[in-house]
Structures are given as structure tokens and as C-alpha cells.
Length: 580
Ligand code: G6P
Image 1 (tube, rainbow, N blue to C red):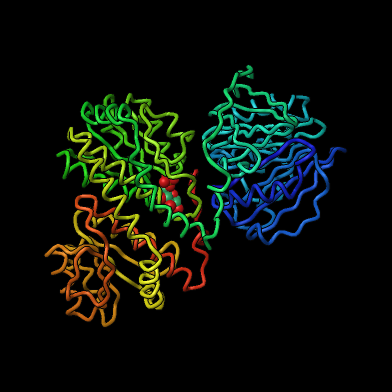
Image 2 (image 1 turned 180 degrees about the vertical axis):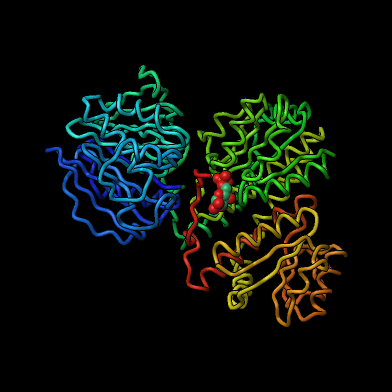
């Protein structure tokens, strides 16, 4: 949610470098963008606009440092005035997050406000303190005292070399070059230049001038020692390669990502299974697609380990927080490990003495770092807004954990290895072509329905998210048995119904819609005469939902392409939602 990229060091600190870095972060938000370049003579040149970064045409001067921002609007509409950077007095600022008390601060720090953003209020606060003679570091510390909310900020202070950055709740990572330093919301932004990173933690700030980097505590101002870590990613992992979009690249990568995901250390799995056993109640907390993966997990734990796991969308936890206490286990399922609604529940839970088990795709993510045990998804960077390979990795790990909980981890591993192999075989060009042909017909419809039972019920819900978010077709998922309790009234002649599974009850439900004129597309292991179209998936036993969801991902991708849309960057969405 909003991408931030900065660089200090005269040889590379150009507008072009910033734009390239921002492009790599555009999945975090793409309503509007802005770049600030500071020259050796201390002039700050700003270029900003609405729209995507590819539409940029700016003549940037040579710089000694530069930063930029790609926005997902929260406070204030998508306008050029609201795009970052914001300049007040001697301060130029970009921000990812939310300043909750901006109204109060706006009154306290009046200026001629040019935008409707909370960020400009933060710039005004910093500028007011800078004008009293405080150092940039002191201004940042003052900001931390006064601002309520979450932020990652980068600032230039007039006449003071370097970029000042601070973090509370939104990610910031430092990339260490030989003669220069990068600061970004996510590693892929500087991966072409360096793999050596420092993770900024909450309530920390950093001042970078070329290759010189100083870390300070944001409350006390005291210096902090940081370890530099080499990340295991290759620059190519974060590019599209020969694929037309990230979404299809990431779908195809599921040929190998299930196998990587289940390659978890036995010690960690044992520790996680012990946490499940000892927990006084388990709440799985997640949002969006990750929530649907967690719902599949709810079935795995019930079916395999006889354990009840409560799955609640993070944004709906407030009524249930009363049940979270010392000894409760919070199971956080997230691709980014930064989603604000999940983070909030974890923070409250931690204060109450709950334990945290997290599954995220980013080893350095906030959730990974606050967890008692973290099981990494190990799928490599996921950049398309719609989550695909991370979701199947989450399901595979939940499946493995359910088997570990039941004391049969090896059996779980074997089943998942067989599933990974079957998915590898399934994902071939002929399979994609078959689905593409069906998607061409489906793309002409404005409404469709998806049904499934047991673990395929959450997949029906996930299918509806996928289809809606990338193709903008109204798709609704139902528990197959619930159809006759209302939704069946929506079935008219030719209405497309995607049927996940081939168990007798679901096939009866398929027959009920077919008798009312529905066009039935089956996604299953065995063919049935009720299907007008059939997508065959391999039999993966209790892990069936993992292989069944993949053709649905492919279907939604091709529906989007067929409708002339960009599946990587659907309207109004952002990948990493770091605001509530
Ligand atoms: C956004 C993305 C979804 C994702 C959800 C949760 O809405 O568009 O694809 O499932 O956030 O994100 P997380 O990083 O916590 O998995």
C-alpha cells in the first residue's frame, strides 16, 4: 500500500533510478506517483502526476539524492495535488501509512495546505520544528511523539545532506550499495543493485548520506547497531521474464512452489504443532485470499487433526478479541506479513499474552518478526496484486501442520509431495489452452456463480475473489448445499455456474442448476454428464483444494486478458494493504 523508494549517492541518485525502483513497487499502489531529486546545489526538483508510472515524462536534473512514491489513495482523492512528495517549508516528504490524528495536527500546525492528505500535515509538523532550529533527527523524534498511526516516511531537510527515514508500522528496508544506499518499502525495488540489506524496525530511524548509514532509536535518539543480511533472492525472481504478466508467471511457478513451501524445518514444524496442541483456543487471522486459504486450513485441521480452528477475517475480530487471552494461539496467514488489520489483532493479542504463529512470504516481514514461530512460504516474490502461488503455499503449509498436529507429519509430506508432482504435470500449455478457450466464452458474461463443498467451499469463495478482482465480472461463491436456500433464484437460462468437485452431493446441486438452464462448467477429477464443459484436475485426495484452485486462477487471468484488462494491476486495489 503505497510504494516508497529512495537513493543517496551522486553516481546513481537520478530520477530514472527512482522511477525504475518505483516501477518495481507499483503493485503496492498505482493511483498516482511522484519523484523528488535533490541536486548538489541543494535545489529540490519535483515531478508528480496521476496515473501509472509508465506514463512518466520528466526532465530530471542530475541529483545527489532522490526519492519517489507510488500512491494508493487513503486521505484525499486521486489528484496531482494529493500525490507525494509534499513540501512544507524546508521539508520534502513522502509517506506510506496513515496519520490518524491529522485533523488535530492540522489545526496545531497551520500552513497554506495544497492537498487533502494527512502526509502534508506531517510535513507541516516537521517543517515547524525544523524552523525552530531542531536537527532533522530531532524533528523526526518530535513527529514520532505527536503522530498517531502507522508510517514509513522519507524526508529531505533543506540544507542538510542525506535522506532521513523513519518507521512505525509500515515496512522500510535499507539496501547497502558500495558507494550508495537505497531505502524502499520492499526488496525487489533495489535488487538489481544490491542484495545486502538492513531491516528497519518499528520506532527506528535512519539517516543515509551516500554509503554512510546511521541507525537511531526514534524515541531516545540513541545509535543502534544493525546486522547487514544478504537476501537469497535473484533480481530475475522479481521480473516477468518471458511471461506477459506477473500473474500468469506466478500461476505457472506453482509447478515448483508447493514443493518449496513444504520444505519446512522439522524443528519448526514440531514447535508449531506443539503450539497448536497447547493453545487455549486457536484463531486464524487473515484477509482476502489469505483468509480463504485459512478457511481451507479450518477444514484441514478438523478433517485431519480433529481440531477446531476459528477463522475470522482480521477486520471482523473486534467482537472476538474478548476470547483472546494468555495461552490463545493467533495463527497469522499473510503473503506480505504487513497487512494492517492482521497486525492490529496480533499487537492486541500479544499484549494479552497470546502466542503468535505466522505464515508469510517475507522472512523479514513485521508478522514474521513478531511471531513466536514463523513458517516461511518460500515461493519467491509475488508481485501481481491477486495472490496465487502464495495462497497455494499457505494451504500446503496448513495441510502439513494439520498432519503434524495429528502426529502424522510424514504422511502429510508424502501426500503433499504427490500433490506437488501432480500440479507440476497439470500445468502444461495444453491445459492452459483448454482453460483459455472456456474463459473466452465466460468473459462475455457479467455474472457467474461458483459452488463447492468441504475444502472446495473456501475455494468457491476464493474463485469469486479472483474472478471479480481481475476480470471485473460479478462472481459469487456459495457452499454447494446452500444454493437451494436462496441463491438458486439467480439462475436463469445460460447463467454460468462453475462446479468445483465431483462428489455425489455437489453433482446433485449441479443438476439442480442445470435443470434451471445453467451452463455448467465442472472442475473435477472425474467427468460427469452434468458438465457442459469440463476442466480435469488430478486427484489429490485431502489436498484436492490446492490443485482445484489453480485452473480457476488461470481462468480468471484469461478472462481479464480477454476483456482487455491488466490482471497485474486491477483498478482500486493494492497488494499490500497497510491501512485499516
Ligand atoms: C490484498 C491483496 C490480496 C491479499 C490480501 C491480504 O487485498 O489484493 O491478494 O490476499 O491483501 O494480503 P496478505 O499480504 O496479508 O496476504
